[in-house]
Length: 101
Image (tube, rainbow, N blue to C red; front, side, top):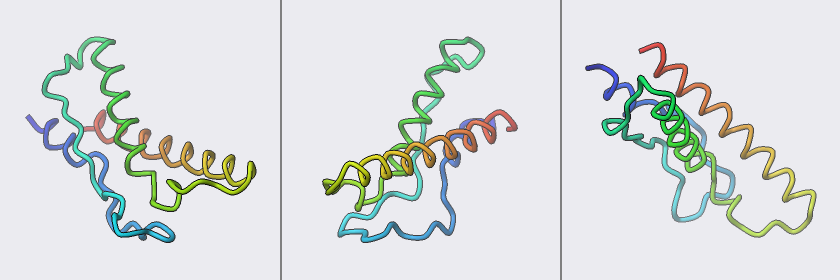
């Protein structure tokens, strides 16, 4: 009963600072991950949950300045590392909250 409520609040970033150089369309601060259609008692359901959480985290971790074309290979790799670290951190935090609830 509480899991749908927890899933709705999984990827909330309270007090997150705005992205550097955020343009007219700021990144969202919350993404709702639907789980009603998943069988979370099966391995396939858990794997699908992880995929959905990773996609939501990827959306939250993509500030406007990252969508611009990087001017060097170093900048491209740097942006990729920042993005991967952010996605990993948010995914782990969201799944830990889900499993605890």
